[in-house]
Length: 236
Image (cartoon, rainbow, N blue to C red; front, top):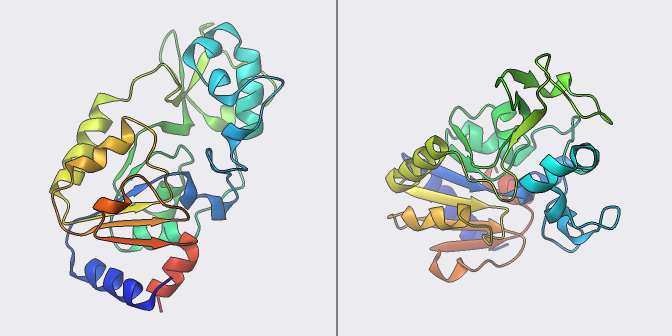
């Protein structure tokens, strides 16, 4: 972590009026939530002989909801997770958040505008009557059903499902209008979400990540390291 890069980043943040922060699983790792694609990530371990990508697909959810919910509560629900210093810092500077995460931590940290591209585990809906259910209404080990008899589905985007159009449009407009775009904790290999950064027109594109990404060569600044440690330097 280069001190000059940190100083540049701090100056850019202080001089920017419309900051958008695009986040992936890496920002929540310090909060105790594992990422998906690293060596120890969720996608690199089988679950009862099945791949995680297969389990969290729409077709698998419909055909085998019991196994889906078993995996879902074992691997994707972290009720004790709390926002870390990075979530809180980006809320404090008033950044608009565009996130691939489903953990609700940006909202809990105080961010006012959050576009959740892949949904939120705290929102759940009956597939028949669309009645809303909070996460606390679902019980681990059980397939949840509405009082109308319909099965309840988490408001998360599974494989084979499309993103919400209103969320897409809000995220794209925010990125297009931004004078600074900070990308945090994502491999930038998941589409269509990763393609959204192509809508940024400014000259302060920053990547903060543990590892290199396919977009690094087009960034104006890239800093590699733990995001919490980077934020600690910014706050000095």
